[in-house]
Image 1: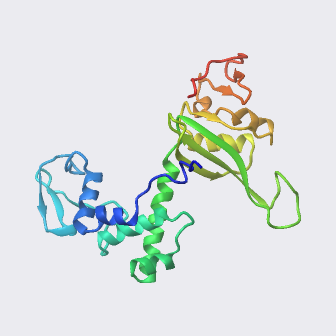
Image 2 (image 1 turned 90 degrees about the vertical axis):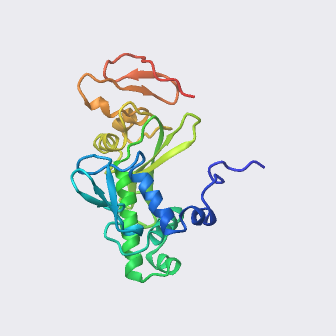
Length: 264
């Protein structure tokens, strides 16, 4: 029996993680490579010439030109920390690898730190992840669908539009092989013109080709359900729509058929 490629995709085991980031020096080199992939650059003047003040993870990089000093962790969520970099890296690994989430109490036990420290680490790391996710737009080929969360309470309206359910959009971008790259689960005010247009402008890059099985909640949603391009709201731009039956139309030019990019 063949295995599911996504469910059984290769990840980083705890042994591999410790081999790569088990010491302070390894963590410091990883931060340095991520921050200055082409070598040190002064954040103030951009010069490369510098010398090092101090030693270990707390060393400072001082620019020869403007004398500005900076550290490896300056401007990051680890700035001014007194914790070892290995503790930060292990906390990031544990939180990012937990499929069902990781509580601050569980993090405290696994890191061997106090609860306030574990709570602060948990809060900062999740905040950084949320900020990164909120600013990253989906692009290329995107599959999406409407969904609802809730419905456990009794009473009220049933089905779509129930006050006991929270509407949200589930969207995933795909690579050229059709494999998932990024996933977004976003709450919306409703499957209406205003709700979906705001979601598209926020979470989709221009010229994104979006496919869905179709949601018949309202006519505005049906218009946006099959192809969403934020440039539609810009002057003289064109939106091409591709529905599940393969027919196409252009809402901007009102032509019955428009060419669409080839889909692998």
